[in-house]
Length: 168
Figure 1 (cartoon, one colour):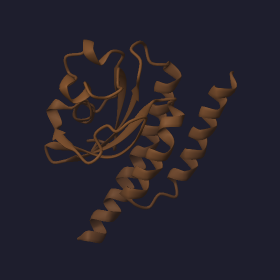
Figure 2 (cartoon, rainbow, N blue to C red):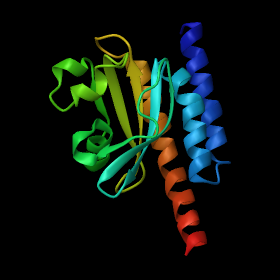
Figure 3 (cartoon, rainbow, N blue to C red):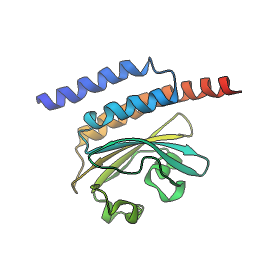
């Protein structure tokens, strides 16, 4: 196994240990934002929250700005589709997939992407990885990011329940 691959796996293992210490939604968002890009060897990542019928891009770590601070209708956004279908979505060429709202991507570096739902049952969060090249996305990146999203799911549910209980 090459050194870069070992480093990505080490980062994932470190992150999995850190997830046990997360005690808020903001903490989870920042943990994902701070680790996913390196783990997935991506040019950018975003963390997205579902708010009713919309998705809000709450954090990003990217080569250039993407959509942090913006929200979109859930049905017109790949993150929303990943959440409503409760499955990862991998797109090797954003211009060849009719689910991608191309106008939102034209001014970005993004050429390929993968979106991973987060949350048990009905996901209410997602994490997206973005690459500046068209073509098949590295399968190790997909596997590592998918594992990270799966590990983040019970953490999201735990801290979300705790925060809802504290607010009520």
